[in-house]
Image 1 (cartoon, rainbow, N blue to C red):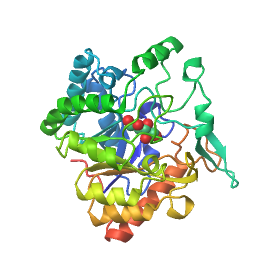
Image 2 (cartoon, rainbow, N blue to C red):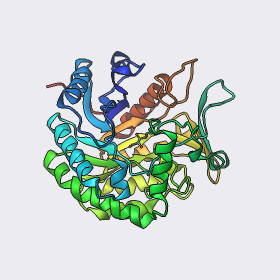
Image 3 (cartoon, protein in one colour):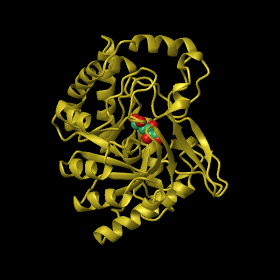
Amino acid sequence: MKLSFRWYGPTDSIPLSYISQIPTMHGVVSAVYDVPPGNVWSRESIASLKEQANAHGLAFECVESVPVHEDIKLGKPTREQYLEAYCENIRRLGEAGVKCVCYNFMPVFDWLRSDLKHPAPDGSNSLIYRDEQVLAMDPRSGNLSLPGWDESYTKDGLNRLLDEYAGMTEEDLFANLKVFLDAVIPVCEEADVRLAIHPDDPPWGIFGLPRIITCEENLDRLLKLNPSVYNGLTLCTGSLGASRHNDVVRLTEKYVSQGRIHFVHARNVRLTGERDFGETAHPTCCGSLDLLGVMKALAKADFDGYLRPDHGRMIWGETGKPGYGLYDRALGATYLSGLWEALTGKSPERFTNT
Ligand code: DNO
């Protein structure tokens, strides 16, 4: 297992020097953030991320994300140029030593919460999701402000996009995902870059848009769409675990034994209703998910992919990007690293800059 930490590049308020001080940290997970989806990343930008990480003794082998252009998800004829750009990014990342690329196939919106700073009795705060509040929001109103998704849409741009998705079914989205995979996976095989789809977060449809990476049946279907091992998963415990119908430990056992998990986002959530949850500290006792069970399943399979602590709470007075502060993610990292050592008798793999 290679322990990693998400770093939003040079503009991240958390410097690489802090990340490298977290014990047993292998590398950073990052991306070229200043290029719009569908465009090719420059070799210089990719090399610069790698150089900065390596200069701090950290690997840059895992990218999150190379975003998929909406025309690909919509299946528009214009997708050809975006598929080609995607393939070119995979080639360039492979040349730079990247081994794993995370992406998602959620129409329009990425992850979604109703409150980013929900206070806990201990004075910390974290992200929560209340379905009723999200259902009451009108994405067409022009003042929807949610974290994680591309806020560069104008009101008209967003409404046009929502119109284009009108009537799209899960079947249509699966068909468009297959076209994407069939175009990109052969390039991944050649470039030795594993593709790892991120589950939909939360794992159910929102605002009338279809979501498909939500449950075991659909994960099976996705993996069968293209049987190459390069077509794999980002096992996000918190995204899948937000639904009571997903047994995250069993899903981890199943897909890790098939060699289809390339990246793990480890975090805990407390389920507070059928479609309500709050994010908690990582340890098993703090939420509804059995993080120890997940780590056991990974250890048993001698998982050698990338794993990162995911969203942290804001603790010790820290302010910053919701879910992506330093302190609680660092606590999560040491907890996960400790479990790994206890379960396998060895520390997570270290990075050696050759
Ligand atoms: C949120 C992240 C997601 C993830 C994308 C992958 O914290 O896990 O935004 O990066 O869905 O494409």
